[in-house]
Each structure stands twice: as structure tokens, then as C-alpha cells.
Image 1 (cartoon, rainbow, N blue to C red):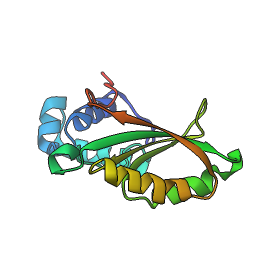
Image 2: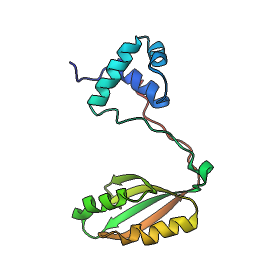
Image 3: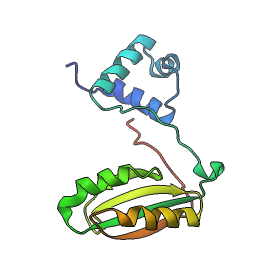
Length: 152
């Protein structure tokens, strides 16, 4: 079936997840298929919404953004999550947002240049968003792993 994912698709995904800039010719060589097959299968997975694009994995500290902070957000009313998420999407320092279960209604990740920058974003932007009842912050001391699931 055209819209089904098989073992070869998972092999391609694993190779691209490890290095999204790997040329299709190299993916094909490692997977034992033709570059045209890699292209067709990758296009299929993009069309299915499985592959949402390719991103760079940046070390923000090397460009002066020394803080990574996770925020657990409490909402005044749970139905307000969509409007709060939309407001958070507009904060340039926020890089990931999850509508979550458990202790927090929303959990997010953000970066800041330093503690003063974080304080400004936190106090002047995030805490002023309509619908936010409270926030708990957690500073990352060091990221030790970032990866995709291995499908093999």
C-alpha cells in the first residue's frame, strides 16, 4: 500500500535522523537501494506528515545563549491552553511547547543569553500572558543527550 511505512522506510528514517544532511546517494549506499528510491520514499514520508523537515542541532552556548530553561506552566482555566500556546509561540526564545498532562498544563523549553535576559523574558513576556496562573522554572545545567528513536 502506498501510504504504509515498511522496514526500508525505517532504515531511511534512522539514517536521516542521525544526519539530516546526508545526501540521498549516501543514504542509498548504506541502505542498499537506489538514490531514486530514497528520494521517492522520503517524499512519501514527507507527504504523509511523518517527516516534518530537517533542522540544525545548535549548541546555543557557543553563540552566547548560555541558559536553557524548562518551564512548567499552570493555567487559570484548562480550556485556555490554545490561546496560551499561541501567545507562547510568539516568544522568540521559546523553542518547544508541549500541552501536557500531570502537574503542569504546558511544559516548554526556552533559551536565554544570561540570567538578566531570562528574567526579562520571564517577567515581562511570559508572566503577562493572559491565562497563565503560575510557572515553575528549571534550569538545565548540561544537555547530555539529544536523539531520535532508533528504528532498527
